[in-house]
Image (spheres, each protein chain N blue to C red):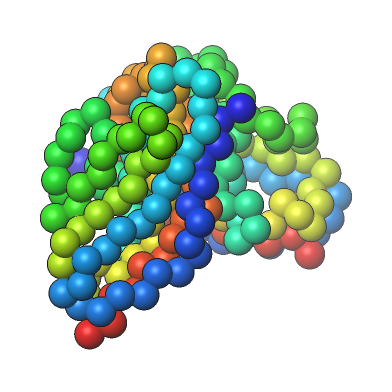
Length: 113
Length: 110
């Protein structure tokens, strides 16, 4: 069974631009969560999607948004990029959320110049 | 607000020595606690969760609600245990809003 995949793996953008990251969950998994990982703040929860609906949201500004498609694939978008958005963005999938185990993808490394 | 604290950024132990990675949490509800591990160049993966009360790769962790702690222990460290370890908390009511600690790097010296 293929694991969680994330594309692209690396991305370089400049301040003010916007970016879209993609996550394909494990087949059959319907819950997708996104996390931001930085050296200073560690892993921080961004949001969770289940059946195309955002079910949970972390404490990030509105520039961070996401969506989920009917096939459970998810995208997250960051608009008006700032230097502080440079981070590793991790996606995790689980069967239905709740008490199910999360499986993490390899991450997308975003660098904002 | 839920919070997870891992006081040590780096823990170095000799092979064969006992290991204890500390984790304290604050949460008003009834939490689920986890330990995740990330080996070099690998993905973050679940090591163990308190509700299963398992021992994985020789590691155990006991939830102490009185001290709000969930320390990870192993009696004899192995070189292959060298990795980043993250303690995490999730509301037991469900959903996947997980709060992670900042992580502890375990270095096992041969």
